[in-house]
Image (cartoon, rainbow, N blue to C red):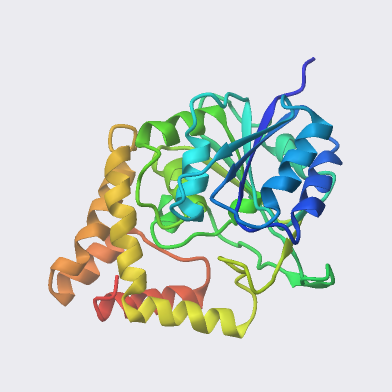
Length: 308
């Protein structure tokens, strides 16, 4: 049997420091039926030279390089995922500075191929954290609770660098549009998958080494400092802005959403427009929830303070 073909979607920007190591880890995958698509967002360092040298070794059928929209990492990933010429059975997001363990793609396929293929499927996993030198420094948190639209409305749980998704989800993603003003590509993919009745699979075993360094646009959620920063965002109004931003994008999904998802999204989108009593009613009816007890308490306080 022919193994499923995976389109690996990597976005680069000033990635010369760690890019070669990530490319080597992709080449070392036990699953070998893949094509790497790289969208560069205007790098001025040696990123493109590294990519072109690798392309000369691998061949243009194995590594394809395109120009990004120059509008930040989220729009770059979304535009790459929505390119109509990229056709595959599955799609895998890749950052430029991580290291994939050899089993990364194989493990994702093991989980995904157990599910019906006619609905949206999304796989994510925990990550092992490393510093700039490659030294292990921890592991990302467990995800203890169900992954569904109620959670996706108020929390992004899986890193995009771990995500693998099927063609059914890619079609819905593309139908919503490549130029949406999304908060982040991974949160948007979680929303799209769950809003349309898809299945999200979270692997509690890590299969990538997630590099933490000063250039990270998005870092891990590990430690008290990260928790404090998340609380700051929750009560500063920034989180409320994200919720409203996501809702504007969700409108593009309405034709494909389940009735229940549509109802939950509408309730959450309007709670900032009503008085406290009705705000609490709308919030509880929406079912919106985070993965931890402390996160849910903070979310409730934010609702009371009209910061959602």
